[in-house]
Length: 88
Image (cartoon, rainbow, N blue to C red; front, side, top):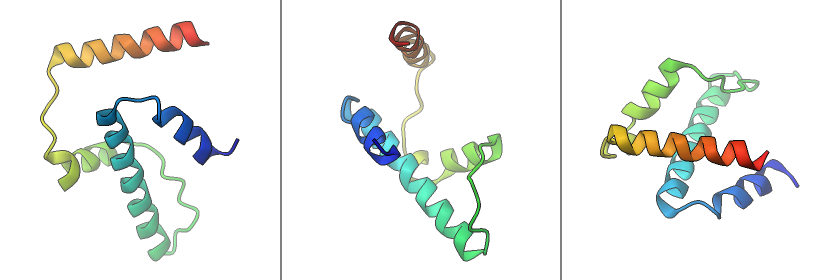
């Protein structure tokens, strides 16, 4: 199974709002990769950094999203921890 198929398999089990976040992030990466190719840096592996995350959050698509409440974030983190702990 290639990476695109793995992403599809994982994403189809997610709720629609999370699928939209995944799509938004994929489009962001696609746009960023296109800019790297235009700039002549075709080997750009898109390393993560705080600056890039902040740029993503400031992008028009993400800036319109309502901020999450602290309780909601804590619930999502705990849910992920439960999934990761029991599934592996």
